[in-house]
Image 1 (cartoon, one colour):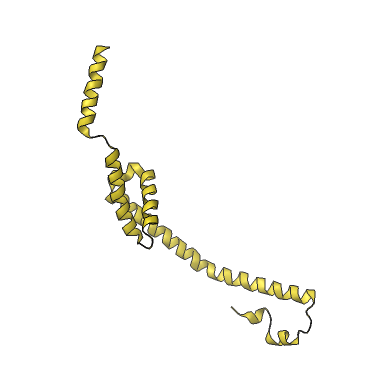
Image 2 (cartoon, one colour; image 1 turned 90 degrees about the horizontal axis):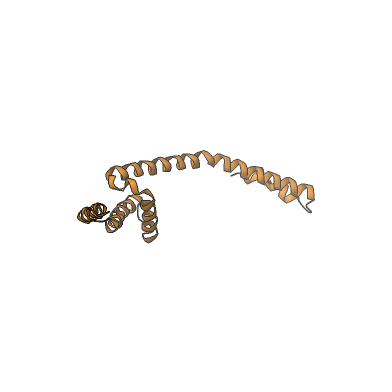
Length: 132
């Protein structure tokens, strides 16, 4: 960033009283310099965001390949990931996903009705239908 593009040392030393026009001119130079510097940084920022998005998409795909049973529970998984992230600041995203997978599976298992119970319930239901 070259501040001499805004005001040179000679200009600064020659200013005894600043007119509105001079002040406006210096401000416009400063704004132009800031915009120029921001635009120079933009490609690097966009590149970083693009790489980060690609990385997160790859992690997500790998997560659901390794945890196929969680595919039908994406809202629950997202909620668990948010909770795990909040509880573990500074932990790598891979570790967050690992912990979230374990926790999500536990939640799903606790909400599931065991297969035996489902079969008994269906038999009772079928018996009641026969009575009708």
